[in-house]
Image (cartoon, rainbow, N blue to C red; front, side, top):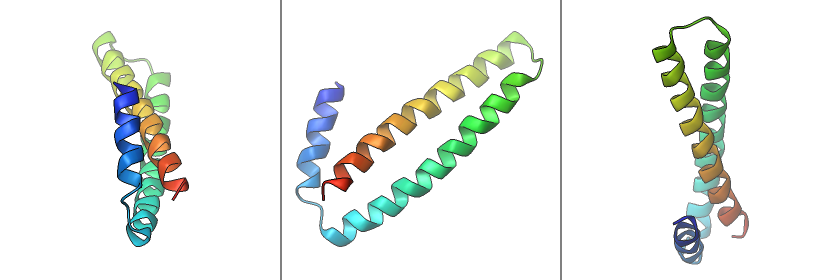
Length: 82
């Protein structure tokens, strides 16, 4: 599935006008900053003594944000080739 997504992103990058690619780079950068804040907040929340149910939610948010970071890095790689 990741390969199909990567192939689709590579094909899409061939059609991205330079101005759009530049705007997407800015958006990807801003997204990185927001994701870093979420990851740091999850880390701090995980340091506190919390009920098991809350810990599971924190872990879920943390994992999803780390997955989003990986996706964002792939997007930035595609845009870097522009």
